Image 1 (cartoon, rainbow, N blue to C red):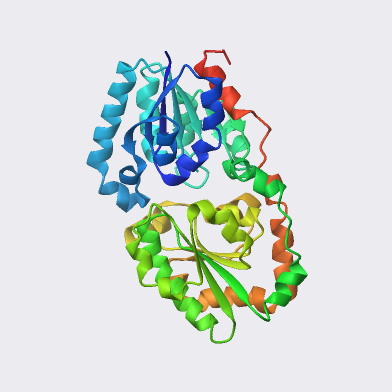
Image 2: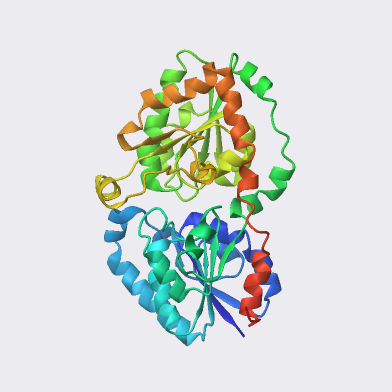
Amino acid sequence: MNTCLIIAGEKSGEEHCMSFFKDLKKLSPQTIFWGVGGDALKREGVEIIYHLQGFSTWGISGVFGKIGFYYRALKKIKRMAVEKKCKTAILIDFQTFNLILAWMLKKKGINILYYVAPQAWAWKAWRADILKKVVHTLFTIIPFEKEWFTSRGVERVKSVTHPLAITYRNELDALENKNPDEIYRGFNKEINLLLLPGSRNFEVEELLPIFFESVIHLKKTNNVKIHLVKSTSVNPQLYTQFEKNIDYAYFDDKLVYAFGKSDLCLAASGTVTLATALFQLPTVICYKSSLLNEYIFRTMISYRGPIGLANIVHQEYVYPELIQDQVSSYNIIRHLEKWIHNKSFFYQTKRELSDTKDKILGEGLDVPKYMADILNEVKY
């Protein structure tokens, strides 16, 4: 009986995993899966050693506070991999932890399938040197990444369809885009504004008050209906004080439904901004972090391109980005009103978003079959 380690150390990682895992399980029914994940993987029969709710963190400052925990987790997972005679590990994103673990597991002769390449092109380019030594296969989900890693010596790089395009395949195929004229005319009567303040407690705590401050000002001159998507990974009390001002609330399993009901969006920087781009929903991207993380970003990272995933994929600022002190109600309203009061700019944004899906389709690799062949010891 084969065993396979999976590390999905945060919510987005588990969501990425679910884009291929059900098919992988069918193609390799003799394999026992175990590792780090959340409720979705647990429901699929994965033996959860660490639940992602207590496992994930964010930013350098967050990692500092959990170094001891992660050190113990690395040792435990390596020991269990040896005890279980594990031959393959699927490591998903979660860069710092997974790169250290990959190095440890490679020394034990374990094949490393690294899904969602580290953003080494943004900072720490030397991580490509580690990857070329430790990975069996590196899976990239952003268009330019395959060439970047291949040129730095990573031998087996597969450019794959972004998990969001797989997860939302049916919804995107069935998508009947709203007529931009109908939406724009609707602005004169009612604006449906979607709030996506994040999937981490600190994001919601930082951003949601500013989002609502923006809403209060926007409502002075516009008829605005507020739609809010709550994340199940966030403390529900963080939403409580704002609930009386919310017209429509959803949990994250209704995200696509919320897209369809909304005209404009405010969102925390993250994978969800690519989802809003796929569904052609004009969005203001907001990012706030700790002072330590900001200091590290400003002084140690040479990358100065976009930080929003939608903008990274498009390689241009399709969406406005507000970072740190720029995140204010004044700036948010200024950007929203560009769409509300400028018809040509609104149309232009919708047109630019319309080819988002085409940009993230990869090379057409059947990821579940490829991984199953590795688990079943088909040679590559």
